[in-house]
Length: 149
Image (cartoon, rainbow, N blue to C red; front, side, top):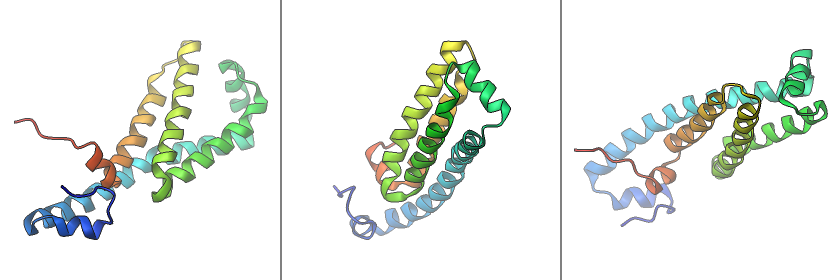
């Protein structure tokens, strides 16, 4: 059994040559797919944070509709940017994903509370973890998906 937290070159040495080549191909495709999937919530979060910093009338109206004070727009924007940066850095990506899960959980609760469609923040939370799962081989080794025969 290989150590999932060992450096990639040591893990690859433990694989048979055929397994090593197929793992490398799958890893490259998974990495790029994960980057693309991760880009969707990252773009939304950075756009949302920017809107919170600028506070156009639509954002102020949204905060009022959600029952949140307008004064929280800046701190929430800072939290969004900080958690997103942590998510983008490979060494802190899991911590960033955990923080973003909490953020999207709060957004989901807010939408449920006022009777708005709640599935959008849930979809973004799923995309955060799916993107990380695809771009982080250690996470894939901790939570392996297997084909059903």
